[in-house]
Image (cartoon, one colour):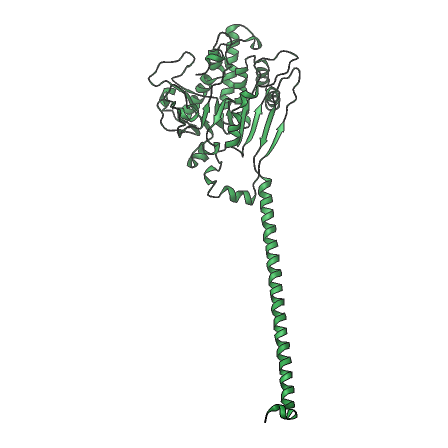
Amino acid sequence: MPVSEHPGSNAPSLAHSFSSLRALLAAHSTRRQSRVYALSCLALGMLVAALWVYGGLVRDVTDFTRTLPHPQVQSSTVGQSKPSVITVTVTATPSPTPALDAWRHSSHSAAAIDNTGIPRKIWQIMLPKRVLQNQTWISDPAKLKDIPSWLALNPDYEYNLIGQDRGDRFVRQYFGDNPRILSTWEKMPNVGQKSDFLRYLILSVEGGVYSDTDTVALKPIDFWVPPHLKDRVRLVVGLEFDRRDGPMWADILHEVQFCQWTIAAAPGHPVFKKMISRILTSLDDLSALHQVPLESLKPTSKEVMNSTGPAAWTDVVFEQLQEYDPSLLEPKNLSYMNAPRLIGDIYVLTIDGFGMGQKHSGSTNDGTIPPAALVKHNFNGSWRGNKRGRDESSASEP
């Protein structure tokens, strides 16, 4: 008989079914709530983890960005009796952090790690040729047009442009207790000799890279020395002249001569103590020769070259090379170099290293930039000699 005809006969069974259904629904609801709760906990955990990771990344990025270069522009006071140029210092020497160390040791930068002992500093000098009393002097910006090449290729280097005022302060600060050096600096009338003297004083104390303002950087300084030699190099020098089989030049005293428009050095290298001594002696000799005090001396171009310039520099550097390698008898032994040489702690470049683009000495001069070229000197003028020496227009070649 159909159930509908006798509803009372199945009442207990129906009540039991409703009870089971309620239990089933309750269990299902409980499981659903449990899943929602579990998913909520999981989502919350993932959110906490993400925030923790993000916080770590922010800390690392903050640490890294704190080490990036922050330009600082310092303007020297331009006094009436103390002419100066604007001194720009781009401080870009990063302090070590885990993030930066990881970046430095990555595959992108491993070859550029600087461990030569040569500080990451660039020095350039701009002194006035002649300033009358109660006059100020401002450099022609066009003469500084090559400076950006040094900044662009070496963003992690501290850059310094030294004018008269800062040069005076530097010499007084570091050599004020040496009356002979201080007096020589203050009395030198020839701006070429003064610039020469100052570069040696700076490199002896601070180290780094000095380069004339009319030079163009062609490769980052970090790549000047091969990685496998970096821990052995403390001085980098290049040739400006190699006679080879050609004639000697009137202003050139050596068959092979080192340039000093660009020098890289570790502070305290012994070559600078010798060079400073050479300058002091040479200037005394010139004063005695011309029978005038230093402040009245009017040296010829050749006298400048042989007292503070590349001829004197070649004498001193070669003397140091001979101490390291007694088999070197004369600078000519370095003629026809087709690859750089490490002699002691001095890395000697070929003519193309610092002297490409010249019409002599085997220098590449076909309009291309050779692989060995690190710097190009534009020879935009010289102020070394007076009327008895060569003038600016005739000083475009050594």
